[in-house]
Structure formats: structure tokens, C-alpha cells
Image 1 (cartoon, rainbow, N blue to C red):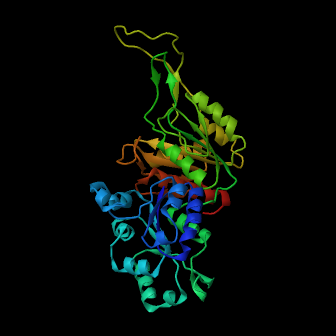
Image 2: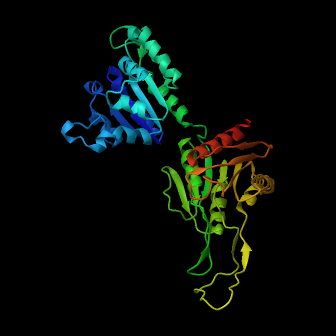
Image 3: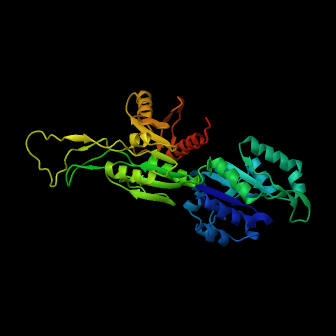
Length: 401
């Protein structure tokens, strides 16, 4: 996830460096934008070194002579790719510009151009903070959905005492994580997640598999790690890269996955079976390529191990989540699977539905829970679906409905 951090001209600008580090701990990419006044208090080089990215300081590039079409529309590109805009510190001047739609630099233009949520953390002299104009601007921004992180009270840089000191880094980070749906409710939990397809070899050339891309399982692993879990991702063959800080265990066949799950799930608190495992495999595997011949080729198949059912029989205190990718009778099949496998929850979807099929970046799912509840979600990104699944898992762990 990507956050744009706007820094405006106040003594508290130096605290933005600490905020960058805090956001990086949440595995967030940070794009820093500095106003001209902010650069009087701290240099762009500091933030370039911290983020490893260019710091944006001007609407048309650092020198007018170097301006081009790319720099002229950069604010639109940034607006489209960020997940959140946070301005800290936010001066009285920037609050007034935001409230009145003034767009005379990169940061104010970005504010008007982005559809992402916006958080501002004001910092200023107490009299400026209490002034009717500032308070009116704050009310205007709140009415538009902008989240305000209230300043702290205490000694101010000007020597006065009162409200206006930039809120603590942790308070700003908490507001940001809450807005983005980032939580730490899985701290200390071991979570095992399966992903991708499995492959059953017919001969040295051919194989049986399915269309799973692994995107849902990998999104779950990423989201669970962000929420503090120790994640083991057991994955069939995919083109995806495992998220950072996740233990990645590659497998090929359903039997490989069964063995890996058995090894890693024994001491797990949560197991989420998002992989699309093969239900059947060839009864015998050819040692040489099966040559083409006239007439039909009969291939005898035998069932593979039912990994989810095996986990359900020995579930213990683990929270067990299964998936059901269906093409018809979704609810009926999901309820049957929930009862038959001994799971706590089944995440079901109709893979023929637009935005819910294999290899899509979105999903449309319904949760079926053991207590009879059902929760249908609208189409959303697989990362958002992953967090909704983990929300449910966290509640199940706490015994909360």
C-alpha cells in the first residue's frame, strides 16, 4: 500500500522523519511531498534517504527549464496510485487552502485530484489554532470526510502554552492504520495459509492442474503478516513473489501440500486453506511420454487426500477456514462443505461471476460460518477481501460475533 506524506512549513516538520520510519514499519511505501516552506525547516535529502524515492517539491519539476509533460501531470499519477494522503504537520495556511479549494502547489493540487482518504495533523501557534477562521476551515474539511488528528497541548515552539503541538507520531500512525484497515490483532499468532494450484503429473510431459493464480492466498499472507501474525505460506506453482516476512514453502502436488500442511499446522493457531488443490490424480504416472495413437486415450484417476477434512478431524483449538470455488448452487455447496469438513468458516464464490474468477485482482465472496451466519461481500480487491476474512478470524478467536 502506498501513502503520500505532505509536509508543510512548521517547526514540527522534523517530526515527519520519525513518522516516515513508523509508516515503513507498517510495510507502507511512502511518497513525500514538501512545500517550499517545509524545505526551510528540513531538507528533501533527508526524506529521499529515508524512503529511497524522489521527494516531490514542485508542481512542474525543480527547475522550470526541465519541466515536461510528465512533470506537468505528475500530481494526477500520484493521486491515482496512492491509498491515502496524510499531511503532517499541517499549518493554518494549508488548512485554509484545502478548505477553499486553492491549488497553487503540488500538495494542494494533489488534494483536489485524489480520491484516496485524507488525514491532516495540524500544528501551529495556539492563537492560530483557536482562531475562528481555522476552526471554520477544520469543520469544512471534516464535513468533506477529512480525518483530523487533534494537536496536543503543551509548550509550543513560540514559547506559549496551549493546543497546537503536532500530535504524537503514534497517534498519527494509529489514525492512518485505522483508515487503511491495518491492525495488529494477530500479534503472536502462527497462521498457515495455502495458495495457488497443485499439479498432478500424467507423464514427464503432461500434467493435470487448474486455473488458480494464487492471488487470493498471497493477499491473505500479506494481510496477515501486516497484522502481526507469523505466517507460513504453502504455495503451489505460481508466478507470484511471496510477501516479505512470510515463510514461503513451495510445493507441487496435492500430496506435497498435504505433507507440508501436516508439518506446519501442528502448532498453528489459524489455518486458511485458500489453495485450489487437485481432487484427482492419475492412478499411475507414466515414466515415458505417452505417445499419440489412433482412438481414445483412457486415463484412470484416483482421489487425492482431502487436506481440509483431515484438518477438520483433528482441529483442536485451531481456527480453520476453507474455500469453495463454485460454478453453481454456491450457497448449498458451501454449507455442505462447511459441515463435511469441520471448518469454522467457508469462503465461497461463483468463479463464473464477473470480477470473481481465477486470476482476477478482485473477488466477490460470501462467508458461511458454523453458527449459521452468512455474510455476502460486494466486489472488492483481493487484499480487501483478505482483511475481511482476517477480521472474521480475529472475532472467532475472541469468541465475538
